[in-house]
Length: 368
Image (tube, rainbow, N blue to C red):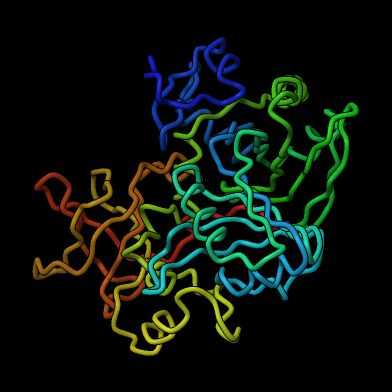
């Protein structure tokens, strides 16, 4: 049972009716897995067929008014000049010292209209910072309670979306605003699994109808509802950063290897001076992958050791890979550590052998 302060998704009743195992996630009661196979079965469905996730805990913010895009471009790390209306962009909101307040997706509708999807726990803080910085005429609204988000992921996703009457075929990181059964929806070619997929943003009051249509459309393909447990194993196999693990107030985009989402040539963005200095110094630890060759499953916080037993890093995310059927991890590692190095991970006092490997650990079809 969730306490009175825990938020629930508009699809909460659908999850409980399916017998989902629910747990607190950033203050939200969300499905971790469903009966009938759990995380491994759900993970496999996405890699081989198709799965659907409720990610309505993710935030929603609307930035609008004359110069909204230019305003955001002076705040967030990535360069909105790189994309055109109808495109989405991964970006970050940083402190002046370079720490990551949050990573998020920006949907550029026009020069004066940008929709943001931050992480659940950080939405209020991102909105607060933008509101304080916004020039006259630009409004920043937290519209989290107005929308639900469904992610449909996997090789058969286009067939499922078409069967449900939703648009398909647009480019990776592009989106369309449309109507579905006379209801407004935004469909974006994005996801967090590494597979080809779409995320459907709809009004809260329409969430159950959209969910039902997609679940029905998945049935001929043996698709499964999927919880946040498999979402985590899928993203870890791809080496995707999770805020609070691979990115945080202490782990910068330089350290987390997300510098590709930084507009280094822009005149300004929050944290530019500190991040530029850190990038040039080449002294900080960097995120890397570890493929476990021994017996054991690493977890966040485990120390990474070299052959002499010297600590050379720390695991930020660790799990069992259902695809590879062995342990994998993401870790902050000293700069002297290189791909192919043999290391060990201290898992509850036992040293587990691993090899340094650049993610992704498996090949996905996200951008196909």
